[in-house]
Image (cartoon, rainbow, N blue to C red):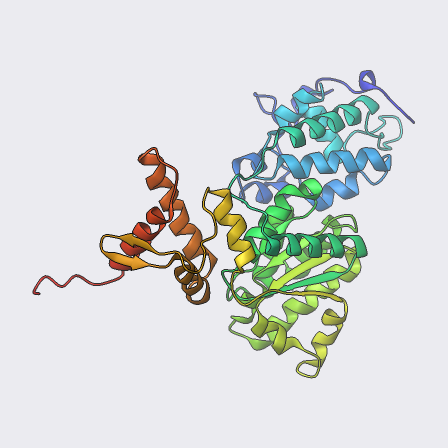
Length: 399
């Protein structure tokens, strides 16, 4: 049955039995209170678990259910948060009414069957989400380098094929930054990014994923796994970064339990994944090393092996974004009596320290240039480099 807003009361039918506080905000049921004790303030204002929302709207028109779930994921993301009250105002409904829709509590009083989502609520939610996406400016610091583009393409390939994609490479070449920004800019809340934690075991991994998915973060490990499976779907993409950290656990068997659980989550939810790890971990998991891991590897036909250090192409784009041209090999810069070659310096930093060491020097160089109200130059970059290197030497006041 299709219904309009007038079929849903603006206030609770029985104020004395209401689950509303004095401010009109929804008070969660006892089983949901534990979810409010973890996460951001915004999340606390949305006292629902993602897997419950999916089940609570299973009777609803598919496009309406999808819109409402996307609004929940968008609003509870700490990158662009909105409160339940703000969303309710945008769709012209009381927060209690919106809460009932999310909790599956909007029912026909005659027979207890759940109503479909109101047409006007779904339409306004769709319009609200569209406005939010247009207004969101993203992260200005992110630069689309060739390496980042290849990572984004791998994510799109995994999402389109409903398979597992692997991103394999050394530390400090931009893997995490590219994946984090893919999560922010793509699929609008449907591509959650989860960083694995050291020495956490299966329970810790499940809690980390649940924290991002807005499912249960505590309790029985199997229950947490089921909540994760129920919260995911084939139209989402789960990104798991720093997979090699799962290896740092007190029990060797715990690592393989984690990988087997990831495979099961993928199989049962149908949700595509991108798994990011180091070359060393991938080598360890190759067929023949651990037979039990071959199933997970075979579900990941798309593997992106990244270069061992930041590339010239990446650095050209990053430097250009801040006003610096990539230096010629023969370029020399004299600063405080020191003769430096920026090209050689960049190559050394890329090999020995990685991308962050370069971008941090660039950031300070731009700050110094801005303070002097001048365009940034390689002299600024070299000055910062000399200062950083001097800081790394212990003082010797007896000389």
